[in-house]
Length: 442
Ligand code: SAH
Ligand code: SF4
Ligand code: F3S
Image (tube, rainbow, N blue to C red):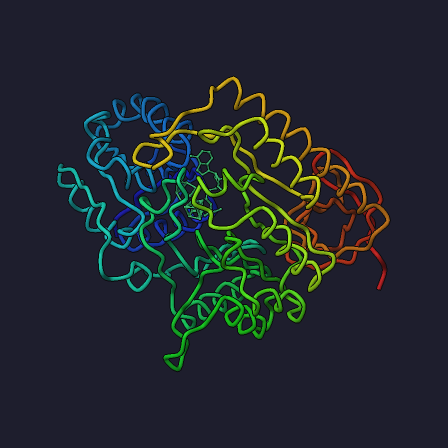
C-alpha cells in the first residue's frame, strides 16, 4: 500500500471552522491522507480561513507568503484555501497568490477529494458553489479515534439576518438546519469516542428548525431535550444565538434540562436603539434587557456572554454611552468586543465611517468596563461549589485543568483523575484568566 500522504490544516476564525477542519481531515482520510501537526513535511496544506474582519482576511495572504519556501523546497506540495475567505474571494485568491492550487468554499467540502485528485494531476481546482446537496450527507465519518472530552457539532449553518456590518450571510449562505436524527447519531458516535460535552454550533443556532424523525419540525429546544437522553453525554451548550430567536421553549429548557449548561452567548452589538436599527438587528436595547431578565428568571445562575462593536458608522459618543449603560445594567461574565471593520459588499460599508482613532478609543473604554465585570464575576465564584469537566493535565504535578459549568477554566489538584471526569470542586482563588479550587470528597 502507498504511504499515506500528509495533510496539515491551519484553522482561523470561529468554532464552526474548527468543526469543519475536522470534517475535512476525515474526508481527506478517505483520499489517503493522514493529518499532521506541522506544515514542514506536509504534502498538502489547507488554510481554513475567516473573513469576518479585515485583519482576519489579510492574515491569509501573509500566511501564504510564508509558505513560499516550503513550496520551493517541495514542488509536489499542494496548497489550498478553504473557509470564508475562499467563499468571498474565490478565484481572486489564485490571482493574488499563484502558489495556491485549490480554493474551496464552506458548502463544498465534500468535493475536496475530487478536487485534490485534480490538483495532483497538475491542475488547479476552484469550487465556491452553494450546491443543492448537503455536504453533511456526503461527508464520511471515518476514523473511530478517541476524542477530547469537549467537542463541537454543527447543527445549523448560514444566516438570513443580514446585519449591516456582517459578511457571514454571504460567505456561509442561507440558513439550513440538519435533520435531528443525523445530529443525534453524530452525538452518540462522539460519546462512544470519549466526548462528555457537546457544543451545538450554528451561525444562528437558536433559529434551528430541523426535520424530526417523523417528518415534523424540531426546534433547538426539542433537539436539546432529545440529546439530553443520550447516555454518557453530560453537558450540552449551544452557540451563537440571536436575541430575536430566543424562543419560549428554549428559555424553558434552561430551567428544565439539567444537562443544558447555565451559559449563554447572546451578542447584542450595541446598546443604542438608533445604532441597533442601523445595524438591522431588529430589536431595541430594552427588549434585550427584558429578554435577559426572562432567561435569568428561568436559570438564575446563568452566565452571560456577548459580542460588541465600537465605531459602527454614524455611532456618536451618546450612542456609545448607551452601550456602556446596557453593559452596566446587564452584567456580562464574558465578552468579545471589536472595533468596527468595513467589509466589502455590506450595507454599512457605504455609510459615514467613524474615525479609527475614535473607534479604538471607545473600544478601550468598553473593554475596561467588560474586563472589570468579568473579574468581579469571576471573583464572586470564590467559595462556591462548581462542577468541573476535566480536559487535560495541568503544569503542576497532579494538577488537572477543566471547565466549570459557567465555562471558567478551573485548576484542581486531582492526581487520580483523568480527562473526561466530572469533579465537584470548591473554588478557592481567582487568577487573571482562570480559577483554582479543591476537590470535594464524595
Ligand atoms: N453568527 C454569530 C457570529 C458572527 S461573527 C452572531 O450572530 O453573533 C462574531 C462577531 O463578530 C459578531 O457578533 C460581531 O460582534 C463581530 N463582527 C461581525 N462583523 C464585524 C465587522 N464588520 N466589524 C467588527 N466586528 C464584526
Ligand atoms: Fe452576522 Fe448578524 Fe448573521 Fe450574526 S446574525 S452571522 S452578526 S448577519
Ligand atoms: Fe469567520 Fe466565517 Fe466563522 S467569516 S467567524 S470563519 S463563519
